[in-house]
Image (cartoon, rainbow, N blue to C red; front, top):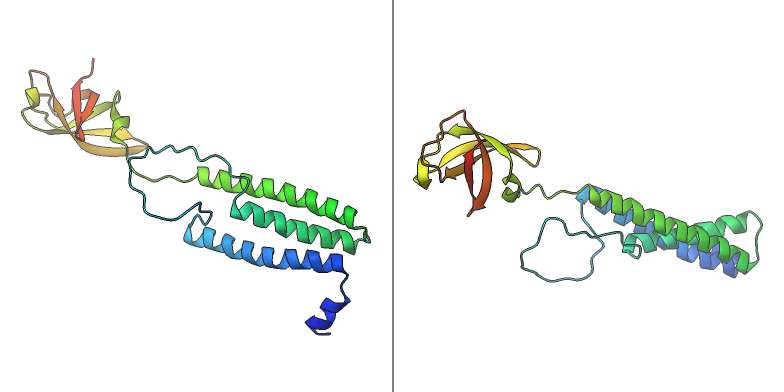
Length: 195
């Protein structure tokens, strides 16, 4: 039996559900492969170049009506309806009710899964402001009264970093001493002896 003959044997209800299930499944699988292999977020709201100062925590939230979740709805709407028809249900409202319920459940589940996956993302960019209030060890002597830069070793954002530091104190802070970061000015850490 060829595809045209098979299609002609289907009821209108089956044609509707096959017409929804197949394209939605194909597009969903393609999007899923792109997202998982290329790391791309293919749910976009618009195009264009934007320039600005943004904080690292943008609180995107869960997008229930994203491309992926709508495709999941259509996919399970179609397959759920076909499963109901296969089990002997041929009343359009019964098939539609099952399709709708499965579609909504899958749409919410897909939105939740991608929300959880996006929470795992990290830019990896160090925010030097996170050093304020932290303790560090002097790596290279820090000259007194901001007369030059020294270096400190500090743990920021779970990473061990060596950064430039200055002090306003009247005496040099020697290598091996412990200091506290009190401020960041133009990317340079201002430190004082640990008290």
